[in-house]
Amino acid sequence: MSSTSPALPADARANGGDLPYRLVATDLDGTLLTSTETVSERTRAALASATGAGALHIVVTGRSAVWARPVFDEIGYTGIAVCGQGAQVYDAGAHKLLTSLTLDRRLAAHAIEKIEAEVGPLAVAANQDGLDGQVLAGPGYELIIGSDLPVVRVERDELLASPVSKLYIQHPGLDDDALAEAARNAAGGLVGVVMAGAGVVELLPLGLSKATGLAVAARRLGVRAADTIAFGDMPNDVPMFGWAAHGVAMAGAHEELLAVADEVTAGNDEDGVALVLERLFPAR
Image (cartoon, rainbow, N blue to C red; front, side, top):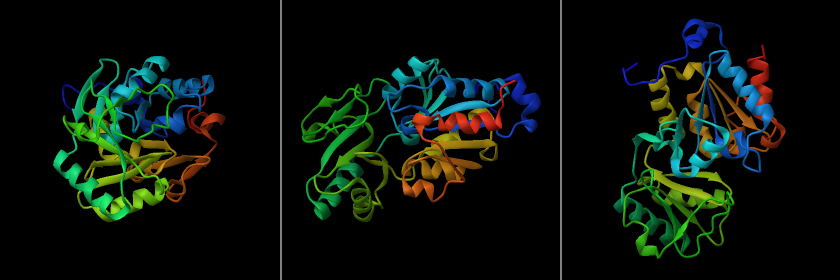
C-alpha cells in the first residue's frame, strides 16, 4: 500500500482474518438508497456494525461525483467512492478526485453515428469531466432518475465541446435493453455500453466498468476482491459481481444481474442491504 493510501482501521488490521468480508461495496440508486433517495436508519445501523467490526464500506455508483456528492453529504459519507461507472475514484471527505478517466470524444461521436445509422435518431446527453462537470442534455433527452439532479439544456453540437466522462443515449422506440444491445452491436468495438437504470443507457470508455474502478479503490484501501461483498441491482453491477467474492442482488433486480448473483436479498425499500449485513456483522 502506497504512503498516500488511507490507512486501514486498527480493528481491520488486527481482526481482518476473523471478518466474513473486509470490504462492503454498495451500489447507490436502487440498492443503498430507498426510492425516496435516503438511507434508512436500519441500513445505517447495519453499516455502522460492519465498520465497527473493522470492515470498510465503499459506495460504487454510476453517478458522477457531482451527482453523488449531495447524497454523500446527506448521509455523512466521507470515505472513498467509485463514481461515474468506474471513471472516478473520489475522496468524499476531501471532495477530491483521486482518478478521473475521460471518453475519447472523436470515438464517442463516431459511435453515435454508427448507432444512429442502425436505429435512427437518438437523444443524447453528456457528463462533463471533473468536479465541476455538468450533465448536458441535448434536444429530446429526458432524465427520469432523481428528481433533483441538475441538467443543462444545450444544442447537440455542444455536447462534446469539452472533455466528458460518458454519454447517455435514449431512443423513442426502443426500450433500454434493446437500445443497449443495438448500441453494442453497432459500436461495441469503439465504446463500452451499459444499462444502468430506467432510461439510462450509457456509452463509456472501452473496458471501463464498476469493477475496474473498484479494483483501483480497493488497492488504495489495501483489500482484495476475495475480501469483498458487493450489492447491486442493475446490469452495470454485473462486472462488480464478477470481481467481488460474493454478489448480492436486490429483489426486483434486472435479470442480467440476478443470473450472476450469489444471493438475492429484499428490495431497497425493505432494507435488503441491512438484512445481509446484520447476518454477517451482528450488532455487539
